[in-house]
Amino acid sequence: MDAPKSAATRASRSRRWILITFATAGTVGGVTALFSALGLKPTAWLASGIAATVFALTFWFAWKWWQAIDEAAREAHKTGWYWGGTAGLLISLVLFTGLHFADPAVSLARYAMIEGDAGLILTGIAVTITAQLIGYGLVWSGWWFLRGR
Image (tube, rainbow, N blue to C red):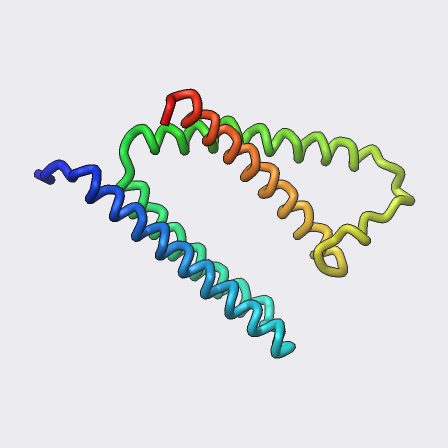
């Protein structure tokens, strides 16, 4: 049977996992910037493999962090993702509906993150994820604000 962990121990572990996550993200960002500065462009398979590895590591770090946080923090995150993520997805749905009925002669290519059809798809994914993250952050913050923490 596990002994109860003190608040200081849990906080220390949470900070450690957050630091590890930021270090991993910073490393990936640095390598990406280096590739860009050197003019190197990885193949789609290499980039996908690297992304899958980073995502697997990030998921593992997140799982370990999730196990270390208390029930209140878990509830804040669950509420934030459920309601905030859903609200962000609904914003994307409104954009999707509006664009679906837009004039087909209007090109959205100038808004794409990269050229080509893949750029348009990538931009749509980025807009959706951004809207969900903003919604999550607002609901998560509101959850803590309303509970006085």
